[in-house]
Image (cartoon, rainbow, N blue to C red; front, side, top):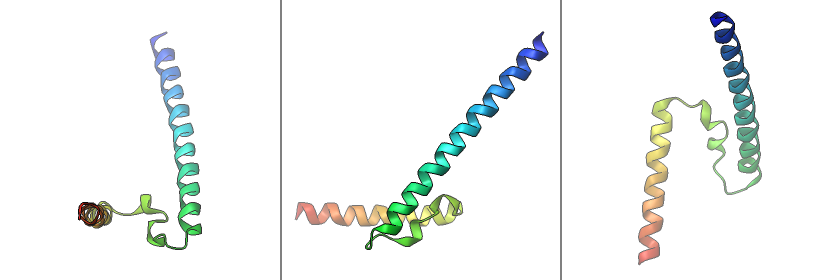
Length: 76
């Protein structure tokens, strides 16, 4: 009985993860299309979820600096 409960729990977790992964992929594809369609957008952000941790860290610092500069311009 206990092993059946474990099996059903495992299957439910697998199905939920599969649905979440599918939703994430669909959202990422939609965002990629939005980025691609906006002329001034950075095309390098398409498929950004596939970058290495180091590349993501560099992008994060780059956009934080852009944000800080925009905030300083707004205050001035």
